[in-house]
Amino acid sequence: MTAEDKIFLLPEVSAPENNMRLDKFLAAKMPDMSRARLQKLINAGYVSLDETIQIDNSHKVKVGDAYIVTVPPAEEAEPAAENIALDIVYEDDDLLVVNKPAGMTVHPAAGAWHGTLVNALLYYCADRLSGIGGVKRPGIVHRIDKETSGLLVVAKNDLAHQNLSEQFAEHSIERTYLAVVYGVPNSLSGTIEGNIGRSSFDRKKMAIVENGGKPAITHYKTLQAFGRAAALVQCNLETGRTHQIRVHLSSMGHALIGDKVYVKNKKSEILLPTEAKNYVNNFPRQALHAKSLGFVHPRSGKFLQFDSILPDDMQELLKILNLQN
Image: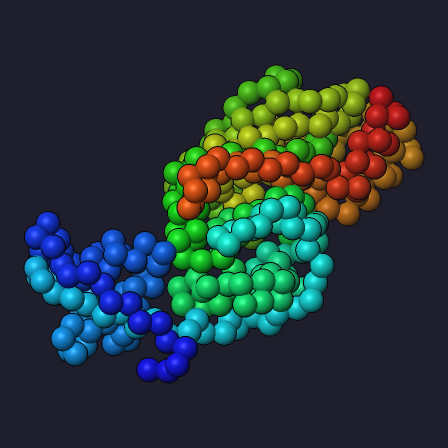
């Protein structure tokens, strides 16, 4: 035990709680910590009863038992904290909402250990992280592609991380994206459905698959058509699969401008003058922006809604397309 350890003396087990699993009992008494985190504390010997260490998550508690839980300081996170400018849209003690720029990877991984959103958040939040699973790190509950810009919500503690994760799992999070695509959908609005899984032809790509995969539903609406060459399309996600919007729109024959992975054809570009065609063909990233995000705050229960304007590069793209319209 160290001076920085926090000691929690829990109320005695009541009659309705008799024979409850130890991890479940602790989770009920300590709602700000995830059950997974509490299980790790049990396994590591940080839970005791009458000076006896309890290391079995499935141990059955008995009426009158009074447990003591010792919570050590959160461990330092492995990714390095880096002083990178962030566009913080909202922040409180439980979470923050970030407007991520295109070109920034969300989480460190092979080939991108530095310059990520997590690196930036570790520096920005400093000691304001109470720990996710016992580690001082921001709780990434969803991601957007490196080359996609827009809004993400990030948890600061176990309570927020667990609650927001559940909201994403239940598909109750409201997410609206804006995409600029080649061509104009024949049906200006509608719903695209199709299970998404790894492509059998290219394992680095996702695809609509007949067998396996996970259900994916995208609601779309054409907001503006630029002749027949391109369109601005709003997409609302009912599910959140990897590359969902890119795969679904491409399956309709309307790949995102700038998408080097899922472009099947760019026939509509011949309808553009040379200057606009060159600009479109050289657009440096997929023209996709996470415009709005809505969710229930994990502590207050209040519904929060956030909105983000289109970044400069997509505004310029629309301006050039509009001039040729």
